[in-house]
Image (cartoon, rainbow, N blue to C red; front, side):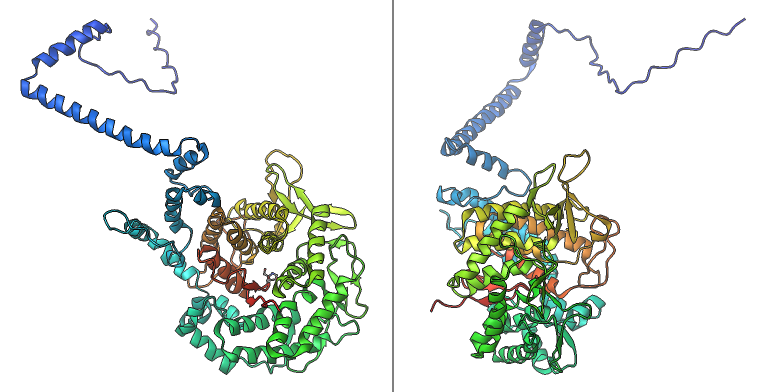
Length: 596
Ligand code: DMJ
């Protein structure tokens, strides 16, 4: 006998069926359902029926009143579909859409006030300068309560930011200065400060004491002319202006004089290095060339030193360089090569053009000197405008798939889709030029490049830009716009992206630039912050699990990156106003000279 066959296995199912038993068979007939409802209603007591009728009536009344109110609001916005859309977006738990200046003019103060409220998320609340509170009918200040609530929410962020925006804490607080990164930062010039109120604070007094008692330049040490000019000389001059304390000017003059031997070359193009103790100046061992960006980005500081001290040789020395380069051949539509020889005064390694390392701040200082001098030195302006046209003609391309506009490099006619993070100073400089009256199409380029620089951060796993990005110019599956070579994936805490965000925000008031800066700040906090204090450069922006801190914090993180973030998040547009000061390439504000 064979056993009965086993039942077939249950078929595989991708769903679960659930049967709800109603205890009786379900009759689908409409009339029967109606009849049964009526029977149930009749079975209720009079009291039960009255309660139900009252509740239903109350709900209908509420619904009616609510619809009247909503209709009023929407009527007020009718005919302006864009604003309606904006209003809808406000209820979503996301950062707000960019704010257009025109909204205020059109009387949408309510929409703007909601956005201002949300602005607590963009920066430390104690930096926010708000419009005066309006007073409502009941005599209460309109946003006082809301602000209190938002402050509560923002408290955690603020606590973080108090430490983050802490160039003072990082450099001055001695008990925190035990980590190596701090020590290294401290080895360079002492802190720079932002607003006059700082001068009353103990940190400033402590820093001043250090400058007064310890900052002695009589040292047998070689310094790089450019780096020490933009950091030390620029820092001292700026501090003098912010404090009015002559100690800093005395130190600046002493230091400036010690740098002057660098200009004693056959061509008057300065050497890269000078010993501030012995006065011996020289080129690097392997070449008699200097870097073009270096010899053309010391002018703001030396010119200002002359103006303050009355000693003309500082200004004359640097302006000789400017004049020389203005009339030098070897440029390409305003673009300069990267090297210049201190003996011959000629460009060397001609035919290679970049807006990155070794050329970058040449362009920046053309514009900024023009602004510093009261917009009278037209030759500087002409060179700047010509260079921007040169960039457009030779170095701009668009990436794939997102069509990001980027600035590449040109070597003997061959284009390379390589862009240093350093180039991200350019959107800010372009915006500054527009603020001072340069053509509006410079602003279009500024906006496009700003987006690109943001993407250079955003497309990385850590949210931080690599030192050098390569752009993908052809549509290829699974390729992003920004690609990184293994040797270029470090991040040195550089300022250029946030520097430009600061300018773009100041010039456009578009809050998306604050949002982008906020994101970058969060990434700095997440991936570069040293738990015991300070920040560190990292080796790999593409590995969020192992960014590999390098145990090194450049002084520009304190002097520039944090300062620009501070200014970006502040809504006080008069704080170091673009109309009264010009930032040197190390973010030290110097005054714009009053018109003669
Ligand atoms: C700064 O020292 C200056 O901004 C300089 O012009 C080049 N870049 C560094 C910081 O990245």
